[in-house]
Length: 194
Image 1 (tube, rainbow, N blue to C red):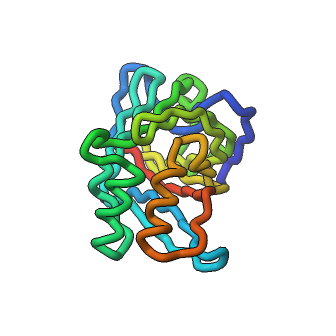
Image 2: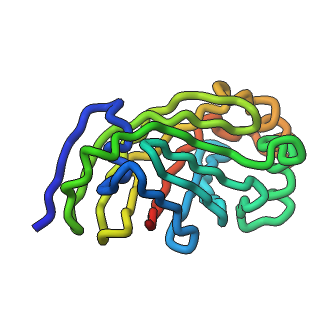
């Protein structure tokens, strides 16, 4: 039987991943993990993009996730290049990252199949700009040595907050578009293994 827990925001990834002693070390299984975001152009054309490389470590109540930005995949090579230059500033900033503190202890009793749903706060850094963002996630202990963590609602990245406006406008100009939305929904599904 699956158990479901609802925890308040801020009990960060108490949810995220646990079932481990503080001394345990968990790493993201890149082969079983994905991160996608959506861009909307001309008000009604939505396109899904992804990063093909996700790295991360969870240990001692702390989670760090790093995404090499050159792993961007928009399905159009020239668009990859333009986004890396004008949005991610990849020659200066090679990774986007998210960090959070977690409370491992609360998850020591979870059995495989148990699920936790919660809202967490992530410190997200992209192209040198950082913001604290709320994320609704679900974490499931798949086995003694594996957790699956997924978003249950998209995380909204605001181009204004991350100082992307000039870059987005440059992409719009290059592509001859009337508009590119400044709000970017992001979703992820990552597996941590011990």
